[in-house]
Length: 244
Ligand SMILES: [Zn+2]
Image (cartoon, helix red, strand yellow):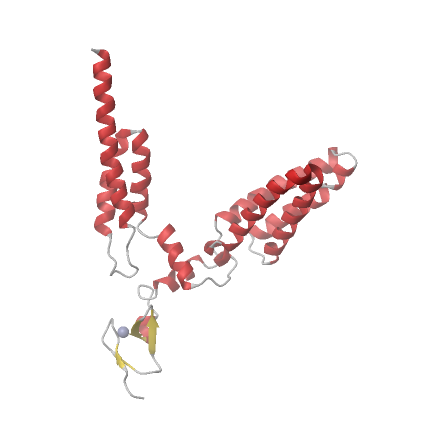
């Protein structure tokens, strides 16, 4: 087969058979499969089947439902006693969700709709409010990239990239920003925000694989840190004047 070009990483010639395109750059097959080249795929692999925060949350809620269900069965009267059954259903749903059983995703929607109809029955039109809130909550849980990956479902590369930038890319920059916000209330944290911001900003490298970004957060952290020192100085001055 004729050679089509050179791998952008190692320079080896590739043909149509062993050419790998990753984010618009052509590589040879061994380079294209490297975790530092196809880092989005490596990120996907690192999260595949890994329990996320939502799974833990629904797992813990299952324990609550279980206790609540036993309580209803033992002490409930009339129709309340009957609610022990769907409550047990919600406990089982939470347990199945925790262990990554795909059917739990459907059961979660079913149980949310069931409890929504109970709320509508008890509260009338006002029951719509908590029901819509619960549905939005469940929809958020089921569509986050990390939860979908826990259930080994497909997540597009662009969504994975966004998730990486939000949760894994240059976390120090985001921490600097958070520290900067806190420093406005607690100016002693100002220097920490500035140091974290400077270190995080120095790390920024869009050409690295994976690219290191979030420079904006680092700068915001530095700015807030400086601002908090100004606020702190103002407090100090006013305090001293007050004492004199
Ligand atoms: Zn190569």
